[in-house]
Length: 124
Image 1 (cartoon, rainbow, N blue to C red):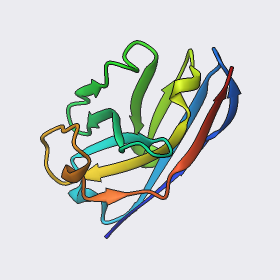
Image 2 (image 1 turned 135 degrees about the horizontal axis):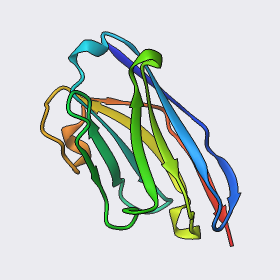
Image 3 (image 1 turned 45 degrees about the vertical axis):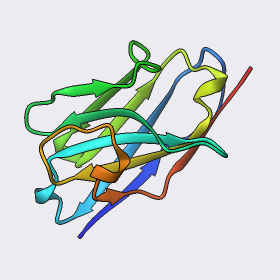
């Protein structure tokens, strides 16, 4: 019912910045929260940030707080993840996700819709 497509990943040097985009389509009216997760090889999928679409309440993982910012653009039906001061440990595939519940969650199992992922590689 909801399709999510991430873009904006790439290769960047440590200390640099990237902005990821997540374009939503389909029956998006049912989505209450959008989030970003990441997964490095051999590791579990990790919560990064989330935003409640109506109130713009945001939640960040401790590892990215102060460096990453999640935001939305209703006109473009898009959610963004601005990533600054990138570190090599930020290297991962980043996934956009949406959930119908208005409760902002850090658990991947809570989310209902997922994008295909976009690779972010930070070199030292």
